Amino acid sequence: MTEPILSVRDLSIAYRTGRKESVTAVSGIDLDLYEGQSLALVGESGCGKTTLGLGLLRLLPNLGEITSGSLTYRLKDGSTQDLLAMKKEQLRRFRWNEAAMVFQGAMNAFNPVIRIIDHFADTLRDHDCGDGKKWTKAAVEARAGELLETVRLDPDRVLQSYPHELSGGMKQRALIALAIALDPKVLVLDEPTTALDLLTQRSIVQQLHELRAKFGFTMVFITHDLGLAAELADRVATMYAGSIIETGSARDIFYTPKHPYTAGLINAVMPVKGDRPALESIPGFPPSLKAMPSGCAFHPRCEFATAACQGERVPLELLTERPQAMDHAVACLHHDRVRLDRKHNDSPKETSRV
View 1 (cartoon, helix red, strand yellow):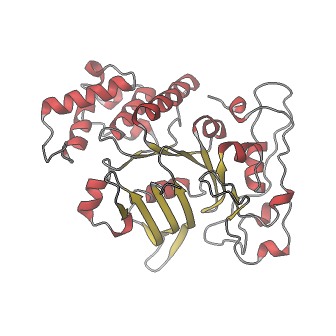
View 2 (cartoon, rainbow, N blue to C red):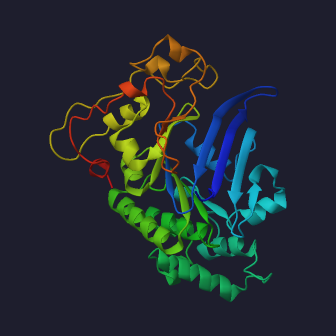
View 3 (tube, rainbow, N blue to C red):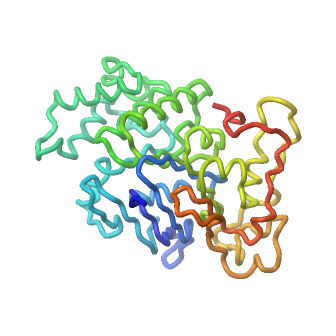
């Protein structure tokens, strides 16, 4: 088997809430991502998806810190590097060259008082353009124009525009173009279609397909939209209360989920054709990160819960013996009892809003 491009082991992230107090937002993450894959992180708001995404590039806010674990990247030159061991200057060179991020909220992601061309110039000039050469004004304009054309934007108009002069869809495309400016091997996207209308969402999804085919980057995208995950992902990881509780191929997750929480998320999706049964909801509420239940964090809401679920934390365990990257793993003692209670036969893509 080829080596993963990103290997995460026992990663935990906490936020300081006081001088001597903190709350763990992400706990014990183990994850391998292989070159060319597209991984979707799905789950309810507040489950730790964005925190994990920021942690993958060490972009956490000041109050956040990685408290344990390792983040090993395989770089363009074939060497491996633990991101947690990198110094500030090494991180600066790593970001955007090796891995980049499209942040949530295209409407306010750009600096409102500088033009789009200046955003590209600042990003490109913070790195050399190969062989130690610096980016000239002409080279910046050429590269920015090429990237904007790739995402179907008019460079002559967009580069000289201020962010408020662009629509939400144009800003999102410009953000994606900026993120791939230095041809990173890994691209993390946080809710890439949030606050966009359905037609614009459809366009963004199609362009992400085209960009992956053209540039070959590995993609991690964060979403609560299961339709989007079904559309874009090769592999899906479900998060709950700061932990990954199920991971596998998109087909395995959407057709044969083995964690009751994953099944509950899918059962709550309204089909777009055929009979429309009453929406099913997951009872209860996610736990407070300051007062996590013992054992499986989902057991207070789970119909299959037993006393054993309240014991020690349940680790992710493979459901097959096949040593493949797409292996299906679940953290549930009763995974053999979980069935998808789908009252229709739509494929995941047919439940998509995009």
